[in-house]
Amino acid sequence: MDENKNMESENISENVDHEAENKSKEIKTKRIIGMRVIKTVIASYICFIISYFRNTSPFYSVIAAILSMQTDHDSSLKVGKNRMVGTIIGGIYGFIAILLIDLLNIELFNYIHYLILSLFLIPIIYTNVHLKYSSSSYISCVVFLSITISHIGDANPMYFAINRVIDTLLGIVVSLIVNRLM
Image 1: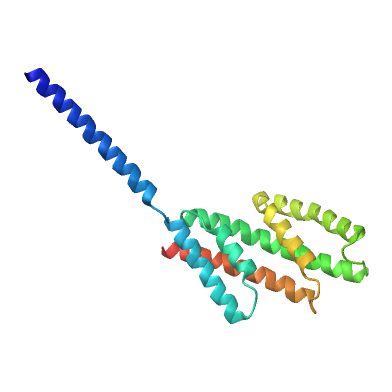
Image 2: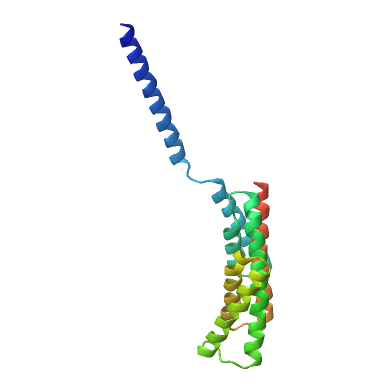
């Protein structure tokens, strides 16, 4: 009889363990939105509002906020710092390229224009590596290309380049602040 009670007790114990494990799994799967998602949405919205009052496109600041948001403040700070360095390097080279292409009166969107833009990627990448920010090379190249390809129709390419850098830096800073406060 004691053996039967022990077996029943073990079976009940196993069932309780399995039920607790299943409930734990249910709770984890029912969790729909995590804190990183919430922080990303808040940072994005703040960037939209800032752009609204600045009367600029929110595109670059919102993207920067999204890409800079990490699970914790320290990770966001590291990613944000790399993005800031990459943005500034890409912005400087983008401005130089625009001036050079205008100075040399090169027709836009032809093979010479594309060759010049492609060759500019060499010093951009090497500048990042030289400054020991090789992980920001990709963002430097993205910023450079967004400036040199998207500025068409702007009365002042320098204005576009500066605003592109400012918008990106705003998005990074907003993301860092939101991540720090939450």
